[in-house]
Length: 121
Length: 107
Image 1 (tube, chains in turn purple, blue):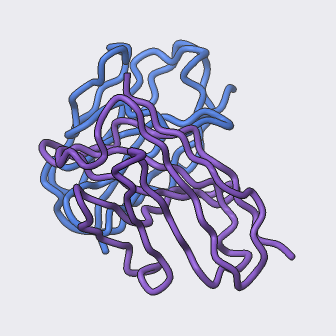
Image 2 (cartoon, chains in turn green, purple):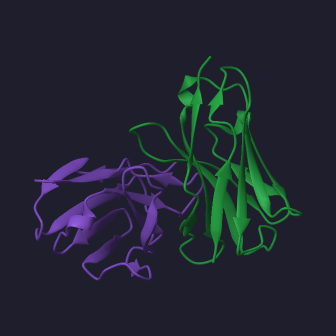
């Protein structure tokens, strides 16, 4: 049974770094069959893909966030992480981690439950 | 970036109604189009991949069609559990992008 679970602080101060972790069970993050993504959804709005991690370290980021984002993996704990620096109120959102197969239609087939993050002093 | 435009942004319908949601891509995305259902307070759930492939457990009243730039999601007979927001998503090129969503409400 594949499961993804986000964790991290729910409140971050402006200009600081948002750090979240996605713990994965039922499949190996380093296995090479999937892209491991972060996606966010501001309150009442749509979905924005942030970026992905593939296998042992290949990453790709949304150009809109590229200068502030780092996604990395921890193979020993089968998890991957998101760091978003210099946050502002516009980064307030529910953050999801999700899996996407590398072959086929490459849809997001498994999602975490999401973690709400508020940027406020 | 490929822009995904959904219409309508919201609709009201009754149980038993046929509902059609449209998604248009700003350039051709072949058949790299997926649909998700999101209920309030929950993560999106994959309904349909590659335009028309129904995911396991998704009722057959959901169908997807289209190719190139124009796609539709049809619910043949709306059920109470279908009231939710629906998103399309293209996986043709990076950055991956989603439509703005269509909220299906009870009339």
